Length: 281
Ligand SMILES: [Fe+2]
Image (tube, rainbow, N blue to C red; front, top):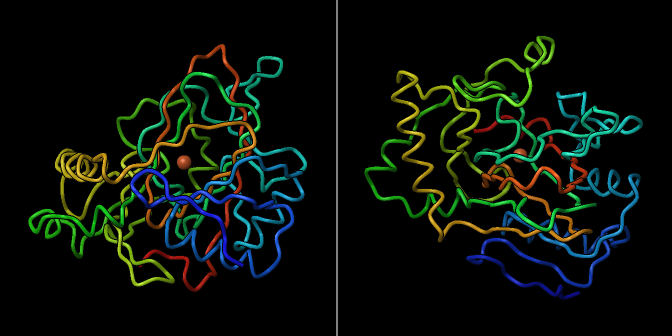
């Protein structure tokens, strides 16, 4: 079967047409997975999935991920996390509110970070709330020699709580205990492809090698400025029933804020790499 696809942004993200993710055969699934890995961000419009279908699609992609921030899980479905600004009786229904979210890659502060993240839009605001994706493999490949030299062979410290960042909510101690700081390579090799990418997560990084925090922040800012250049970025404007998933080994992402009186409700799942490939290398 030849899939109907359109390249988005600067050609790294791919939109699929004519696919119902709740019911795809094995061959189509394999082609989708392959194209997704090559293009790093996959976009599907007009998807209708029950929670069971969302979880079972996620599980076809890889072992299910369960988020350490357990206060935002769906009650009967720990694999589904709600991302929302909606409050129910004064209690937030989901995580992350309505503000801007800074560039990051998901759960870099864990030993085996989540491979792919799936975001399924139920309600979206009419203003703002876009998700921006930065292609860290293209950014790495195009690096000038001096910048590349500054990242080769280095490691960075990734933390669930970055120093000196304004917090949306406190991280309970038991969650910090479950997610101690991790040192990962600053240049990451894709587990299935002959491809390297910066492993950049400015919202989580607390240091590079022996650099002081301030020097490391300056270096992270320099790498972020390089990687967020327009030629490496795709901005996704959400419609209800969009389903988007991305490869955290090769992509960073961020979100624009949106007006607090508008509602945004997304369901998020994630999938791991097999255990032997899960630790970044
Ligand atoms: Fe994220």
